[in-house]
Amino acid sequence: MAKKSESTRSLTINCDLGESYGSWIMGSDVEVMPLIDAANIACGYHAGDPSVMRRCVRLAKQHKVEIGAHVSYPDLMGFGRRSMNVRGDALVDMLHYQMAALDGIARTEGCKIGYVKPHGALYNDMITDLDLLDDVMRAVATWHRPVDLVVLATPKDKKIVQLGVEYGLILRFEAFADRGYTSAGHLMSRDKAGALLSREQATQQALSIAQGTLRCSRGRKLSLRPDTLCVHGDTPEALEIIRSIRSALMEPAP
Image (cartoon, rainbow, N blue to C red; front, side):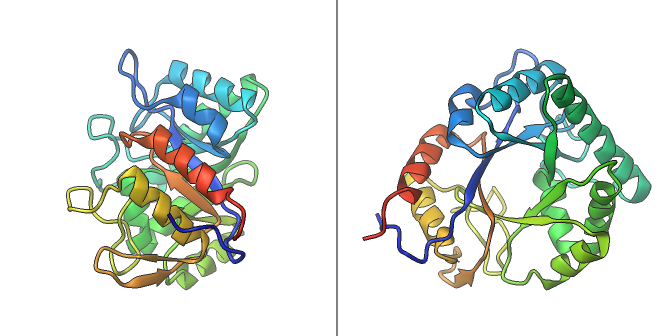
């Protein structure tokens, strides 16, 4: 495994949590929460329910983990991974609804949401569709108080940055440890070979990202400058991946 170098950037680690629903359990929220800096908590549209949200919020508060609203298309059956034709005021209203649900529970527990991170198909669609991204940014910018927006870090972020400036938003650029990348710097479709990385691959990719680069599936080196690093909570080895990455990123420089 590559050692951490003096040029390694300091990255926060975030994870998608609260994705259980009723008696159906997804992920290892209790074990993962102490190992991360920020929890992207599902708001009921792709996963999660009120009781799951409350339990996850309480865990985050207990471990002093920042809370983010993990908003989605209304796609509970498809886990939010199917694109939908939802735009304009309808999308803004759906995002506010989800944000309000999680923030309301958080406030009853003595905390609040600090950021918004779109999930699944909505997250991927808005990176390639600036009109959709405009709707998402409008939703976040018109929330009753300032919150940040998480977006994918790519080699070409200028248009996203400019739109964020126009809306007065603070953007957090994100990279993924456990996912393969295309040559354009986007996430590979989950049905492609190499889209989901093993623990060893994810740890190596996390170190590369922390040093400012990673290699896409075709071998091209991509230059990224993210603020935060994500591991998906529904990845089979999520807990082991996070432990491995946390350990690797804390290794002293040689």
